[in-house]
Length: 516
Image 1 (cartoon, helix red, strand yellow):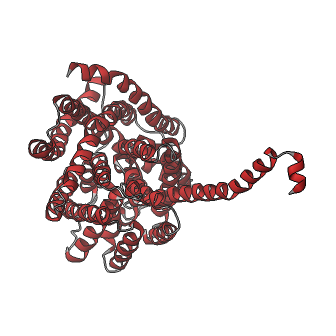
Image 2: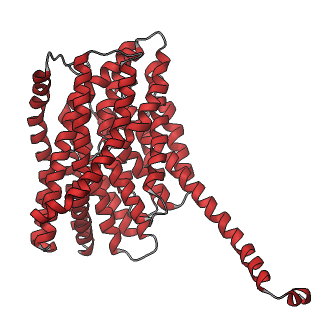
Image 3: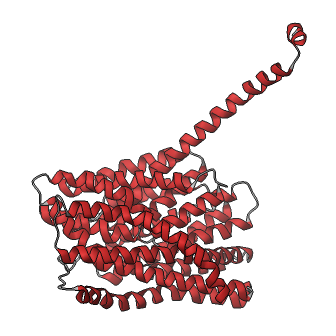
């Protein structure tokens, strides 16, 4: 165990640098705003800065922990499950995994606490059932080789038909729930499950089909909440904004965070327990991994636990109040339209701080043998999220229905999926779920809520939907990246015969060319 800890220290330093690069730009933007056009109280600013420090440490521990534990566990369980060739077992365990992981997903807890019209547990159980069913659907798609675009066309058609019959209070929340369920707990495990299941297949499409699980698991919650909206009578609960902190000294500042830590110690322990128990069962019954591998996974789980506790404490206690107050101040200005470019700038950088984005980018680079680099994926995600946050702020300021953005956006994304290489489509729809993680739920959503309060809008219909917008635009930007790559490849192939012929002529002697 000591050797494993020592071996992980260089990796921790590497992850710390990555976390600094991800979070410091957001801190810089907020500081510039605070000292210029959006003054905030010293208490909120100090909470934000201490929250940022905890988020940096949280990302450092989480990203390494996910590599050491969540990914290997998911891959081995996926492989083992597929090897059984037992359809009832795959369906039963798949549903149970999806249900348990979703109930414990921290992002979903954050969203449920902010939705005034639906009881927390009602929303959480509905969403968990949706993820469980669609994780089974994703397994079956991979096992039988069903094309992902075909399923996406079917399910999103059903979603938009149902949307016509659902009360407006449920619309934005339904699409938001599809984004938050694919958070830091769910993504590493589900993506690794996909790699494990695909490893059993030997056909040329197996690598392509290893992606797409997150995409389908994002569909389930949307359908579940839309059906809930038709069957459930929403209450008229009023929106309760986050409590803005007031501290007089450094001791009170630490006290504020110290009071939040036990909540997240318990919450993340509850989140990890179902996964650990499920893996322990597989280990006893079938996996039989050696002690060194188990030791490495145990250290990784400890890092994951510490990382998520620090991350969520920093995000909820430090970032959420700052985001809400900043939104109120910016939207309360006479030049409130400045909220749109500022939102776009924050969106560009904030996706880099999403813990699960690291997992996706790394896995994409590995599966494609570097053809799609982590840097290229990062740029595509940042561009997409920047656009989506700008559009979300337009909604907050104008009160335009979210369907005016989602229907054209998803129609275009699904239409180009028919001509884009399958791998890029699966990666794009996975990326949409991954990009809308805890940073979106704890900073961008409160930012939109604060702005909505300042302009006198409807919180449920106008502010909610930020997560949904963030989840939508990467579908377009990543697929466009794939389309450009495919066109370049085709162009190179067409040019290759001409180059080969010219090279052959160049090697011939002059008299032979004359005879020809």
